[in-house]
Length: 253
Image (cartoon, rainbow, N blue to C red):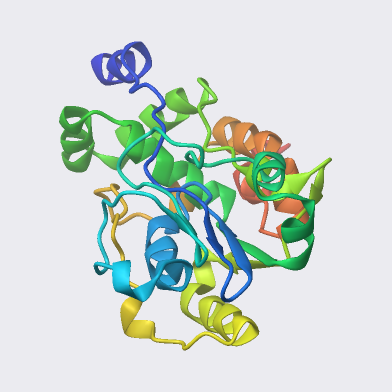
């Protein structure tokens, strides 16, 4: 097991700017803020047609150039340049669109259980070679590698995207765990047609194991993630799994 853990600690993939951006629709008066590891690209592509002139819309594509018009804003996907860059903070978006639009438009984003999202990001960070190796080993080695990775604290933080001064700054949230139902609710709020067949997965989860995310955690790794995402766990009332991973007291007999 030692070589695997050494590899995971010595050669982590560098954090990269992902390829999605925020959306703004002047027609439907909404702002969509893209978060990390929450099926954000799928949601982005779903709501994109309401932010661009239909004459210029060229279909659902994972990569596209930016478009800024009287219809709205669609940022570039697949590139890192441009004024509407990846995972902008709420403060940056507000400054870019102006106070009036920020206050008047309906703002929403997606969220996900931090414990699940962190496992997803762990697989995203792995090199292809290590990902394939972890697919084949006993799960105890996967858990050990994940535990070592959490010591680096390279977590997918994104609360800055939808908060201002420590408080939620959007009007509604789509929970990853209830993607269809919550997206349908957002569509109704915006008077947008709900077409579930259009909500596709453009970036599948890179994890290559079937074990549930709870199985990845040791008491130490659960405590690290719980501390890192304390605000999210409290605000969204996601279960804190640290209690399930606390060391059991030794019997006195």
